Image (cartoon, rainbow, N blue to C red):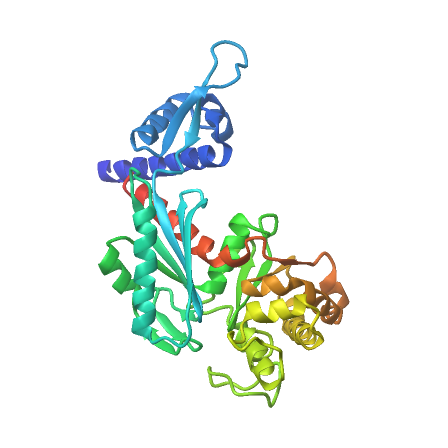
Length: 394
């Protein structure tokens, strides 16, 4: 009986401490009295838990706030610089790394581009970026609390990369490699799932609970926020909608299917099409998203038409998705957002063909975080993992 009672007390304390910490994070600066009023906890419990959180360097006391009669209260602030996390967006031809504090503020950023590197070469570059970001982190009570990485492929619930066809990776266990090297918890997630979560938490999706996030890079991935939560499916494989068929007898995809959506609505479509046409690319440059955008800005009609066709192809897949999920919001993200002015109208025009009642109250937005959606999403996963681990020790 005593053991059960002790366990129950431990659970109640953990829940109360979580509630107090979340209340401070979401409402700071805030007084102890206001925490008690908002949570329904008695003032003695709040005072005790606040003292623990101060000792653990997770919150700070600031100057006195406004008085509501009597002595001015001491205000409490969440200590967002108690630790830092590394967020990595691994693309098919780039790595973007950020260092964030516990509130998701970007403190440092570094990125590299590459072409056709082996797994080992990519791993070496990944280590270089992580090393650089860790070295840039200010001194803090908890140091680097974790590393998160978004990857363009299928990731199971244990963080194993089962298939990343555009990287030519299969059954890659980079999670354990990173944990062994850096001695911190590592989270590996599909980059579109990470991007969806980043937009929900920090970006264009804050106000919505039913969101389809479409990440358009060399490939095309989809992250689903349903009922306010990231939906991952039975084994964590949801969102592989870049591989739905939109062309019955279409081109062969690296995944083995024919006519996959990403073959007609991603950067690879732009490059393959542009390489077959006589585009005025300077001899010193290769075909890239930046060179094509530069041409479009100069008014090159072929390039503008190419972007418009991609936008129409995006709209075909989005129409299917809208008819399936009936979302509140679609967010188009990743580097294709730089081509918004040429792809937005074709997307909207194509999506007018969705079922009429599906279009009601539907918002189509471009990412407000631009290239940072995925990196911020996995950084947020790491922070949540840190607090979950911390609260287990309460």
